[in-house]
Image (cartoon, rainbow, N blue to C red; front, side, top):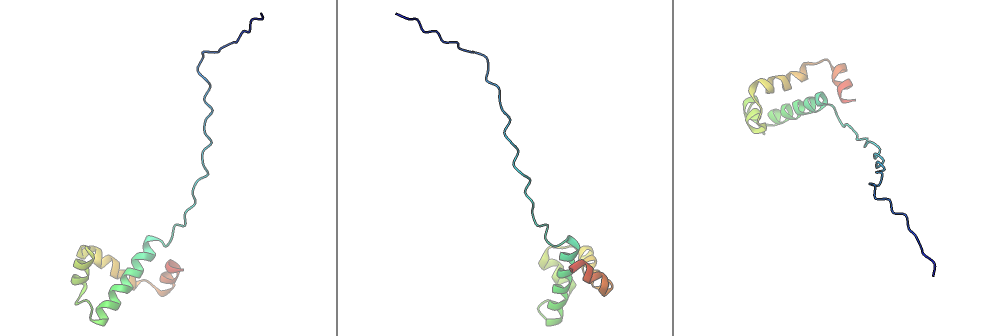
Length: 88
């Protein structure tokens, strides 16, 4: 009868690091300034149409402070070229 021998390695197996997935490339979308400018146009349109009484009402509706509302609406005072660059 032949004897069969096995060699057993009790050491911990080496861990092979998992390859990192490639980074997800997301479309950043419009910039904050562009969104703020679009919001300013939306507010202005709704005030002119009579849907909003004034900027204070718009601020309350949107949950903005009056100071932030002033900053948003002041975006409309930018030169047209600057506005186009923000939106383009």
